[in-house]
Length: 118
Image 1 (cartoon, rainbow, N blue to C red):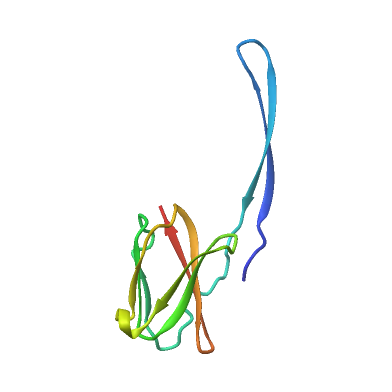
Image 2 (cartoon, rainbow, N blue to C red; image 1 turned 90 degrees about the vertical axis):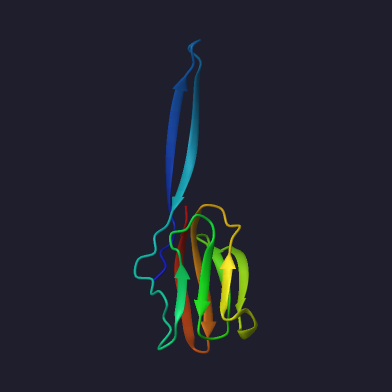
């Protein structure tokens, strides 16, 4: 279940040493994933480690599949092919700190795995 992002507006008022005031409004968008099923592969192995990571993680599977890494706004950041020629394993790096989702399909089975980069 995906929830729509919640938008909050915060206003900050500041005064400098000369008594001049300034105001700024910042929009903060947050979203949560409640009830997201992860690794919905029946009788198949799909592993992501370490999670959370410092920016590099490994994806292993026992089957060939194409995956996408998307950010929390749904923007595609990387595409990955897991196949026999790479021993059904790949290392991922180069993502900025944040929350990402590994998504893909294997036949009629869906993959949804949350990954956190610190």
